[in-house]
Image (cartoon, rainbow, N blue to C red):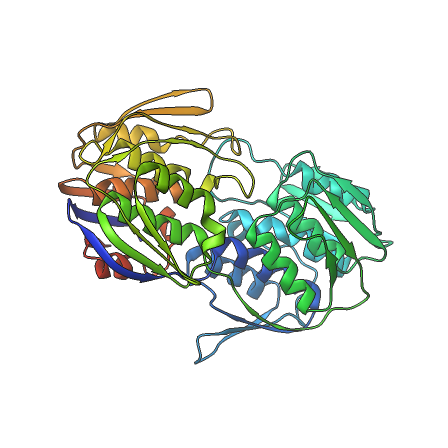
Length: 419
């Protein structure tokens, strides 16, 4: 996607089916390297980050086949000990998972760059400190980072400074094929961490404590291939639910795990929205006037940082919202780049330190530029709820995380065209 044109101000209603979780798919796809075998994946989202991951795996020697059923089969047996070019790895943050997978399988890993959204400093120091405790030698160069463990890795106790999803997943991948027991303290508990643990477990790994702050991995000498169904994307689901609140609803999201979205649903309840949950569905209907509330992001089960921009957009809508809303961002040091674009539409937002304070105001359709994946989603929500034609450029950033975006929004009644 290069550009999205939206003719906004229309009520959205209907059903949308959520795809697989990008945040779960990336560590699982890279984690498959440690199996050295054939793995089959269903519900794999066809978003740019996932397709880029498959390109990296293909460069490393993996044989990839798209099946008629929609599943994707990856043969990791031919993956070689090599460094993928920076032109591939720098496009996605998830390429950092190569470190744990390649180090465990080959005793050496090299990464030339890892990209993703720019939220300020996003160091991988927790990953590297953990690998060092497991016996790896870390060499940082201008061109990237090199990890070596010529004598193999060993189990270790690794206390994380914060419950980092990336570090938890990376260390879990490496530890699954490492002799001895590895204990990850202050571990992340996000659903995609649990999904990775389930994948590795099905491949023969011995992992306990998932969902708590201490994960224990008892290394095994060999893993094997398996079939894995990628869990539903809770951020995609949350975004479409936000669209229902912004544009009236009712919007029903199917193929979702409601328990993954409890903080969002709690916020909707405070705002006055009506919510119905089923075993695998959520329906939201918003009144003409809903109340803004206060959001504070944090590690799971706190409010997810990846839904922070979308909520901020809801608070800006003067034709629907009332009161003052605030969003406090405690996960990333800088995630407010989308605010300037909302201000172009007339949003009344002030940012102090890590908190955005929002007064609902009358917005106008404008030409906007998406700064990143979720910030772009926030701009799209604002455009959908605002009368007139808005245009969002740099829309490829949004395409990183939303599969069949145009078709799904059109099914809800949106007038949207993707170029």
